[in-house]
Length: 364
Image 1 (tube, rainbow, N blue to C red):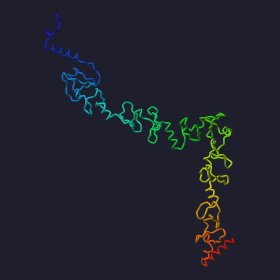
Image 2: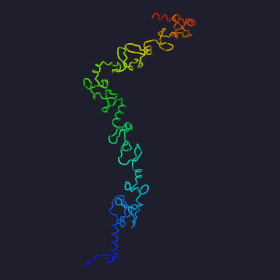
Image 3: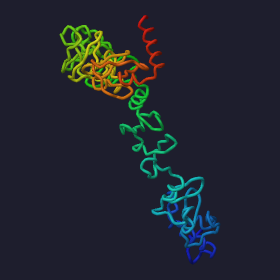
Image 4: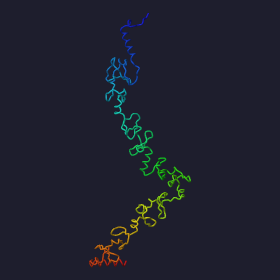
């Protein structure tokens, strides 16, 4: 008859194995969390520390992670050799790092805020960005999920990129479809549009670049002209404020300008010649008399001689500079006036040559 073994009947070998079995059952060997620290008795017999290569004693604690074991003092950051705060570590290429050193060594820094990027990284323009930091550099709109356009080294949204491109080409961007307006545009409420986005308020026809705005509504040119609004003779656009009526036409105040210098008259006097308007200065330069001495316009009486003109106060002898009047007798020398006194002082031979030249020109 078989009898159950107990301490009194069991052999010393059986008693040692029974004690060892009871001690293993007391340990939490089912805890499989990656970073947990336990006293795994099955590892005490066969396991060695992954860092120092030594075995474990009966009372040692063991760190078990990803099928490797460590002494607690050996389970440290590969960079700073300190234990992991809160048991949190990051693994890269088989080496474990604390959170701080992992960020310093491997986590990218945001180009805008300078902070480490944890999680989603936006790679653009040879830099890294937080999704919320990656924004249009003109309108500050988010770009992480909408995409961006590169413009002069900047990340721009599609709308801002279109505006910048159009500005570089000297063109407008349609405020409705955000496309570059290649040909004619219309201005409506201070914004540029393709004309075909609108229809005439009166006749309903599709508008062209000749469309006009009045009281917040758009009209084709034919319907607009029927409304009796004067059209500027320069820009061919309606005049809704001050009107200048000159040369048989209507003008915007700023568009009624000198035909030569293109400066607006702004209510000052103008001079008309061949249906063109000129300021006083350019009218006299083009069609009036310029003093031979001072090179200014002769505003009052003028002396003319030798195809030249003089102001009254500037008509003088070219030798002695004595002022002469219309009654003063003078002679021509080198196409300049000379008074009688100075002429009499000329050598006889010179006077004969001057007289000979004068007689020859008179016969012609």
